[in-house]
Image 1 (cartoon, rainbow, N blue to C red):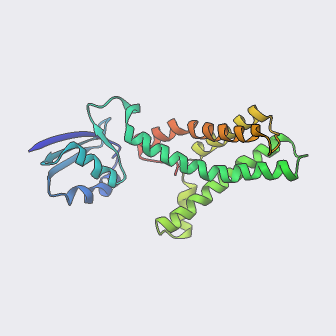
Image 2 (cartoon, rainbow, N blue to C red):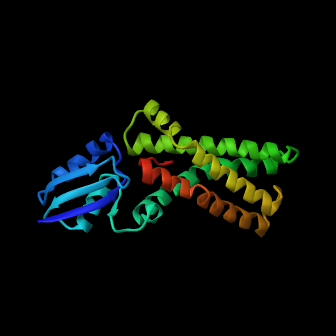
Length: 217
């Protein structure tokens, strides 16, 4: 009989309810307990099951688990992976509205001041991100439109705003806010802006996911 202890992001009674069916149905697990009051939210499992198998079960439940011997708070690879995927999803939603607005205004409304262009781009990026998430929740999670929209609006606007600011500031720094669409510089700036938009909110998204099991998307 083995006793395995893992650090998790199972931090409350609702989390325990979500993970319970996955652990209870496994015949190799004799007993388990999550100490939500501990810093590491330690999951203790007794049974004939390996550490690797437990990690896979917890991942299926939508959480992360790492050995208690693993490094500090910022060294949880499964959480970094999940935070990265969430951030990429957010980046896709934000970039659709953001860059579409910039391209349209620079092509057809070149007289509009730069600060207005960037402000409108940020606003439209936030809107397209919420819209994309609403659609995903509606059709992937089979939720109603009102519920999908409420959940999308409940995502971290701080993360999305940081992403938007990083993308637009990078674009302005490289191109000055104006560039010929046929110029390699414009598309180089586009790529750099996407990279900046991904990197800027990633640590924050990791922190929220690791500590509170909350994600931007």
